[in-house]
Length: 181
Image (cartoon, rainbow, N blue to C red):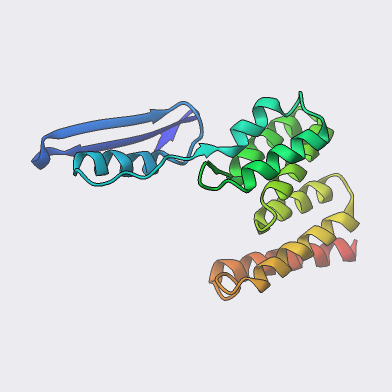
């Protein structure tokens, strides 16, 4: 749990004689992964390599690289999953900051970058669809909602899940509403 942008993880093992508390001043969802590593160390088990945030590496140079250089960096990170992880929520947080400031060009740049960095992530394309819809670009909104739906339907691990069916139904309703207006 946590609040005010701080995520916390608190663990007490009275019978084992230790207590620890993890806190992050970011909105990182990876405290549970760090907790697993600590448990492995305490239990004298092998630890896993902790991956670096690919988004953080991209964000460090996002405003200093040309678009071509940025795409090369994204491609490098995508092809090195043993070193980097990519998480949609990290892209979305930065895009949202730009969006709130009404800097839609930069917000779109980050959202589009997420689709390049994670071309198999249906959620990235749904975020792009929502952004297009919010700015009145309904044709591109429908195109990206449809792409998201098709990605979910093509994924045998997702297409029959209740959450995926509900998500698809929601997007189909949005498309219908766009078409009716």
